[in-house]
Amino acid sequence: MTLIVCAHPDFNASVANKAVIETVANSGLNAEIRQLAELYPDFRIDAEAERQALLRHQTVVFQYPFFWYNMPAILKHYFDQVFTYGFAYGSAGDKLKGKNFLASFTVGAPEADYRATGSAHFRVYEFCKNLEQTAYYAQMNYIDPFYFHGTSAAAGFGAESVRATAEREAGRLAALLKTLEA
Image (tube, rainbow, N blue to C red; front, side, top):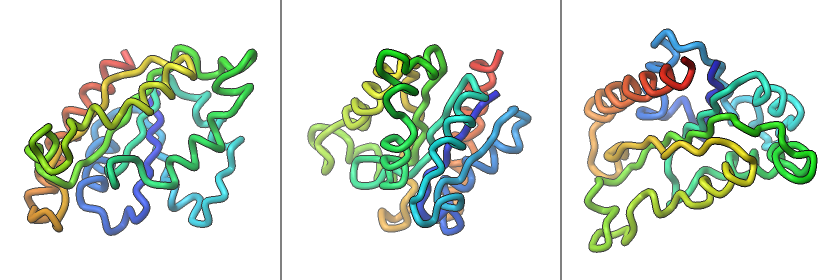
């Protein structure tokens, strides 16, 4: 079974992340979806409830929009509150050992921006080292991030094309997750 931790701060206004979640939810994948902003609008994360959700699943997907070259604040707070000493790391912190860790996110800007000569100056995966280290520190199986570009209206992408791209990419994500469930 797969746990999807959705960290979009305004999910109802989302186009891409909403399409990803809806498509994966309707794919036949056995998944539990936890909407952090809906569950914890005040950022008071119930760490024990989140730990129990993690323990119920073999694969954990962190779904979010890529904001300012990073994850939204609520997801960073989630890691701070939930991935604690004695649970995720430390002498007795092996509760996540062997579970799959997959970051899945949407990138608003076009792919061309994420090159040495682009406006972001780095490739997307270079911004993901913190995720990789988190997975390794928690003894989880790090799976390369799943992401796609061109999801921001501010960057000139229309809602219909964003939704179509998100649905297509979500189908690929669901197929990947099904292989991890097998």
